[in-house]
Every structure is written in C-alpha cells, then in structure tokens.
Length: 160
Image 1 (cartoon, helix red, strand yellow):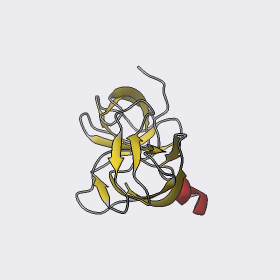
Image 2 (spheres, helix red, strand yellow; image 1 turned 45 degrees about the vertical axis):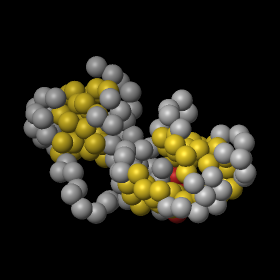
Image 3 (cartoon, one colour; image 1 turned 120 degrees about the vertical axis):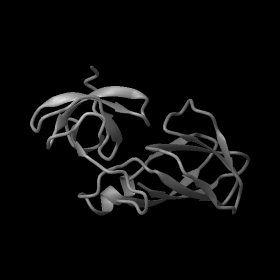
C-alpha cells in the first residue's frame, strides 16, 4: 500500500478494521488513491476517517452535514505568470494550531478576469469573471491562478 503522506483534514474510508495503535488501508476519494493509515483509535471497516496528524494518523469521523471545521481567507495578486496558493496557509500562519486543510467550499472573487485550476497545475482551467462571486462546492487543497488579460487580485474564502 502507498506510504505517501496524506494531508491533515483529508477524509477517507477505512478498507478494513484497524485497531487503535495499528495500521491499515484506506481509500481517499478526493485524492483517488489508497494509503496506509495509523489508527489513533479503533476504526471500523468502511467507516469514514479523517487524517488528524503526521504519519497519516487517522480517527473515525462523521462528515459534517452543516458547518465547517476550518476557514481561510487570502488575497493573491495574479499576473501573466501562474501562481499558486495552498488552502489553509494564511490561517495556519495566523494560528499554528490550524492546519493546512482540504476545502469543501470556496467563494472566489477577482478584480480582473482570471483563470484558475484546482489542486494541480495541469488540470482544466476555469474562468473567474471580474467583480463577480463564484462558488465552488468541491474538494481543493491548492489553487493556481493566472490573469486572462489584465493583472489583478483574486480573493479566496475557503471552508473545510
């Protein structure tokens, strides 16, 4: 199984019963991959889990129907050169107890029309028109932004 580190706050599904202190396999839908996790508590097979610490430490988790655990706010200047922002970085800098996290809901607004990509620099581009709020209900750990015609500022509100 993959020994890749999974980002804190990422949700997954345990693929087997994992005793407290033990390790086992889990699937992470937002990453479309499997990884080995270390149980912080007893985890039942096919239960939702969330990564809570380094070395893929996980615990059982009930996904929220309402509300979010973390929030982040950042304004990014964009130019003709693509730049990126890791979700949760500003919140973490303000409070080290807040981890970088996976957003579930994003509200974006740009001063000038720009193009964005979610998670990877080679993903499909989305256009954000100038001075218009755009909502995205999707999982995201990183945003890439580049101007369309004119330099501007992208405002990001992220919740996860």
